[in-house]
Image (cartoon, rainbow, N blue to C red; front, top):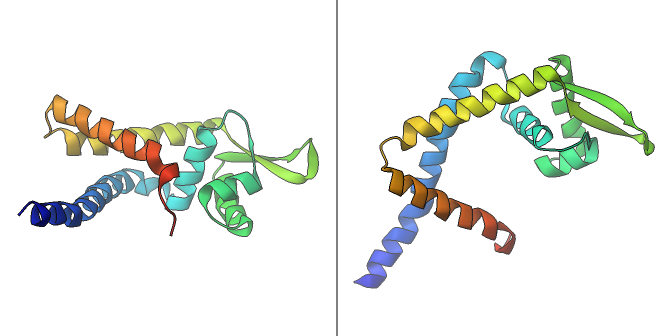
Length: 151
């Protein structure tokens, strides 16, 4: 009996997690639709926003999990919108640095607000204790990410 319950839980968890993540993403995308951001552009803004200094294009591509040419396409669109600036890396003139502009920071704030609103709306039905427990569980899983097999 316990094995069947354990199997049911193991089968349900990934599906429930993915459905919840999709709900948050859909709500956030609806808030951001007027900006015309693609998911890759939004991720690039978040990565640049969390970086203490400008990033080389190659480092941004690596963090995005895409090839450098694709990162160039993402940055081209962000630069055209006025959300990032490019500069030659003084330490290596062949490399390009990318940094958020003030407008890019404002968009990042708007993105963060949209994500918070979506999560708040979704998780409002949970008690404060359940929200705290969920946060602790997700933080534990996130911290263990380096221990997870890739494949």
